[in-house]
Length: 166
Image (cartoon, rainbow, N blue to C red; front, side, top):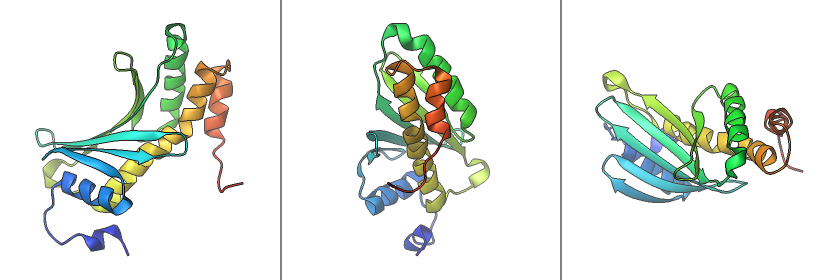
C-alpha cells in the first residue's frame, strides 16, 4: 500500500507529512515548531540528524542532513577538494562542511511554488536520498582525510556502488 493511501485527502502541511513518515519509519523525532521537525535516522555508518523546515516565504521545504566531523585543520583543503568531487556526483542536493559547528552537511531545497503540494512518497524519497548520499560518500571522506588516500582513490569507493549484501 502506498504511503499516500494512509493520509487523508486533505491539504496537509509538509511538516505534518514528515511527522507521519517519521512515525511510519519509527524514527525518533522532535517537532520543533509548526514549520520545523528534527529526527534521527540510523544508517550503516552512523546516525544522521535530519531537519526539515518549511518556508512559506519562498514556498520551499528545506532539508539538512548532518553528522559530526572534526578533520585536522591541515586536511581542510583536501576535504574541500573531496566535497567538490562528491558534489560532481550529486544531481539532487549538495554537500558542504560547516567548520564552526564541525558538521558535514547535505542540503536540499524542494521548491513548491504556486501552491504545489509534496506527497508523502516525494518527501520520503527526499529523506532517503539524503541518507543514501551521506552513506555513499562517508567512506570516501574517511579515506581522503584519515586514510592517506588521494581524493581520486577515495572517490573510487563512492563511485563503485555495491548492490546486495555479502
